[in-house]
Length: 136
Image (cartoon, rainbow, N blue to C red):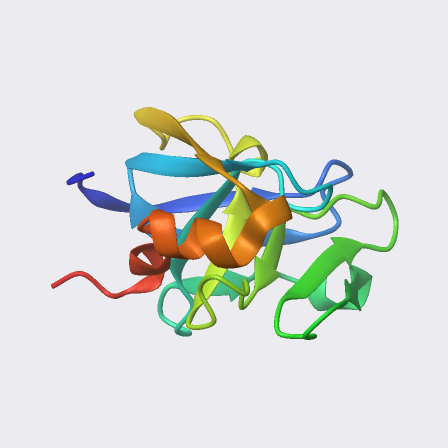
């Protein structure tokens, strides 16, 4: 999707974890059928594209499994995963939950299916890995 890039802010349910990310105003969210990553938007993870705000790091804990590549972060208070570093499909990226984005900056969300239960095949069959590449 070709759209203007804007700063989105968002966070977890209790607002203890807050972040900002630069991404298009029109995004693709990946609706994955695995139990962990629901409705994620992928963006490049460089420091200029994503930033934790305030004291958010104090409220985070991390869960990994399998290859331990994906760093699933969640709030210690409310348990919400509003973002995570280095999704296995996009080790150069960050994934944010689009429903955790504050209102006003998303103009369009296209939902695409990701077959996380058959991860290896799904990465080959989709273009998900391209979403963490910096667009010039």
